[in-house]
Length: 443
Image (cartoon, rainbow, N blue to C red; front, side, top):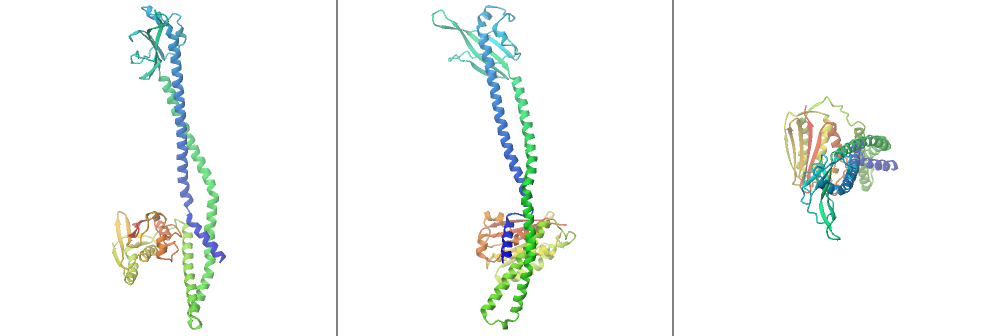
């Protein structure tokens, strides 16, 4: 019993992972990781770009203020000369060595008195400036600053407005630098993301190696334990069948009931072992198609099942409707596909009450055959539908309705359908019914 308990614990644990589940987990993990790293790199790069652009703009504003303050005392000389001579030793010339800069002098009415340079913004000077502070303007990739110029007035302790001075500088160099920065950040971020992705693939593979190895050991244990448990179960079945075949040797009725209980439990365990062995073989050889050359006609495959379940429907008082399209041929294993549709029909009859209705349809859609099994049974809650193909999983309402059941039937159904290169879709509504649709490729 200790071996049996350990085996069941390990088998239940296998519900949480599948043979190729680790390989399906890694790509989503890598994608999420790269998205997160990409967001971090993007935010960091954007913050760096904004900081650098703001710093360059502050430096530009400082240069313009320095230039305009150095050139402010020259307004009187500029106004006094009808043809200003900029070759003379004027203080601001030492600050205006940058060919991207220019200066403009204005009188009190905002009329240009003189200008020096080649980049001038197409804007009038802001002559209405009640606060008398430097005013920054920007247009057509030219940034400028304008200040009012005052001198001592006629009256004592008064200032008289003499005019305005505007210093400008082209943003061409700054924009070129920022464009190079953007390109560098983009190339650097892409390279970093690529290197992080490659290293993450390697590290993820290394991190999963122990888990994959442990899972392989788990599957090997399941296979070996199944074989080991078959022998004692076979002996139990043989012993109980022998005793039950001679009921005259059983003295008490309670002993007979116990023997029947033992036989039923042993048969249930035998079915469990067979199912687990099948799933273990499917896990180890998920793409094994020994039946590749077999061609089957679905309607002929389903007819024996229809006859069997029609009798069951009459006994249970359930309406059983069938509509099978002839001539739909597929490649597959007859016994495995019979098991698929038998499991689905058994579930439908198991969870449909007397007076209910079950339908079996065989149709064609493009190059696929569609087998639909629909019932008016207890249904499945929407939040539970994603779990119905997991091993050893059963919905709570199904447990209440039918205590028997191991939760392996639909897992086996899905595995067999995948082996046949098909797919299964389920639509269900609680207390309304369930519809399973199996899609299989036609030959």
